[in-house]
Structure formats: structure tokens, C-alpha cells
Image 1 (cartoon, rainbow, N blue to C red):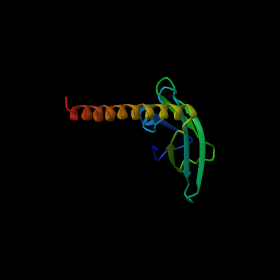
Image 2 (spheres, rainbow, N blue to C red):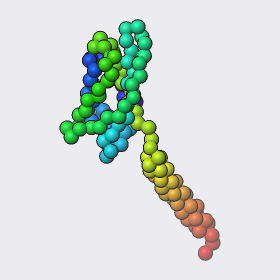
Image 3 (tube, rainbow, N blue to C red):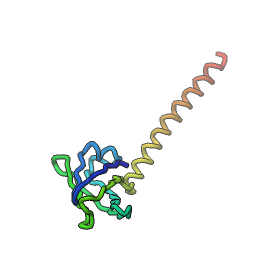
Image 4 (cartoon, helix red, strand yellow):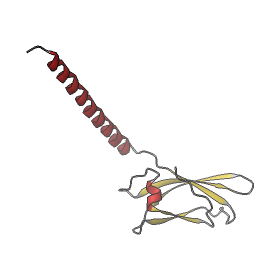
Amino acid sequence: YLTRRGFHGDEATFDYCRLIATGALPQTRLYKFRVHVSNLENQRICFHGIIRLEKDNMTSVHLADTVDAQQHVLAEWSRDLTPQDRQATMASQWMILAVVGSVICFTLLNSLLAALPL
């Protein structure tokens, strides 16, 4: 999560590099976000939405009209994994396991061959 405090009004701007720090995929340039607003009575309001980065790598998030200018807004940027993301993650994990397994097998086989009398 990436958190920023002290938004004012109903818009907040985040730069591209801060958004990447949330783990969102940069090639899609689509980011899900969740915004929690705490007012002076410490009531928490939650907003959900999707933003798209613009060409200048900046974007604005428009919050609901209930956000008062005096409230502090805590934005937690997150991205839910899509099925395609899960498949890509699993594929990369299997690739790493295959490489590690191959190295271990090669090392064991090499040790066995070295132990055999010729």
C-alpha cells in the first residue's frame, strides 16, 4: 500500500513512480484504488474506483462530494490480482522451481559420477 495524507478538496494527484510502488502493472496503466476519509468525528468513509494514468504520467482521482476540504484523506493504493496476473505469477514460479531443480539434479548427478571408480 502507498499512503498519502493531507489531500484538500475533492481531487488528489499521484505521480507515476509512486503508483508503481503499489505493485500495479505499469504496462496496463490501469490502477484500482481504495480511499479512506477520516473526518473530524473520526468517521471513516470508503471509496473504491479505477483510475487510468494519463500521457503525462499524472492522474487525478475524483472523490465524492461528501469529502470536506478540512478532512484528511488517507489513500491506500492497491491492485487486486486478475486471473491473468495469477497465471503469469504461477508460470514464473514454476520456471524458477524448474531452474533450481535442474541445478540440484545436475549437482547430484555430477557428485555421483565423480564418486564412481573409473
